[in-house]
Amino acid sequence: MGRKTTVAKPAAPAEPSTEKEGGLRLRARLRYLYHGSQPPAARFRLAVIGIDFLLIAFFIIGPIFKEAGWAFYIVDYMIAALLALDLAARAWAYSDIRDWLKRPIVWLDLFILATLLFPAWLANLGFLRILRLWTLLNSEFFWRTIGHKYDDTRVEAVVRALSGLVTFVFVVTGFVYATFLGHEGIAGYVDALYFTVTTLTTTGFGDVTLPGSIGKLLSIAIMLSGITLFLRLAQALIKPHKVRHPCDRCGLQTHDPDAVHCKACGNLLCIPDED
Image (cartoon, rainbow, N blue to C red; front, side, top):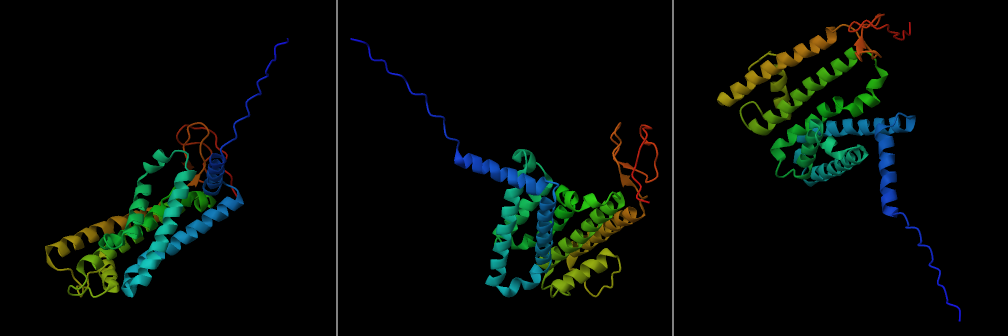
């Protein structure tokens, strides 16, 4: 009798993980939206920046409407969910999440998120949410979307200097409002803003003052910081006009608009001139 041979069937190919493929597709999509240069990606980033400015406006006027009670906290938690979603999407779109977490701007955004998630415990630190303005206007995300239209480095320098000045004004206003509310002269948010601006500009009308040694030391710090920030803004405004045109030999990024040779290595340049 012949021996019966059993032919082994080839193993079925392993089915790809649907969840893994879905995650990869989502990550690729987020990278396209957050880092792509095509018009749909640029429009998406413009929408995100527009929403960011609306959130910053809420952070500025938030102390005025805080007495609205539960309605204020509902809006607060809605903004927290929106910000958390944006941060999670940016982290997922980044090539290395650990490297992303090393950036100081990211930790500032995470702290702002914490003040939104725990308003009852971090209520006195809510004024630091205004730092979102500084993180936005100093982020690569903003300048890759908006700033690429300007090769003039003065525009970027002025915007960064203004962001520092405006952020400082509202952070100090929030601190004064949270710390000295109810003291003589500080009866509301507008009084705190008025005190901050008059002190920052060294006008010093004297009709609104802060009590005690702490108030005097804070006033001195505001005046000194104000002088520094105004000088930085003035320096940015009068800084010589330069354009971004990387030298292909030494990598120097900025040059005079009419430069023919790189001032660092002498390499011949060909800077586009629209005139």
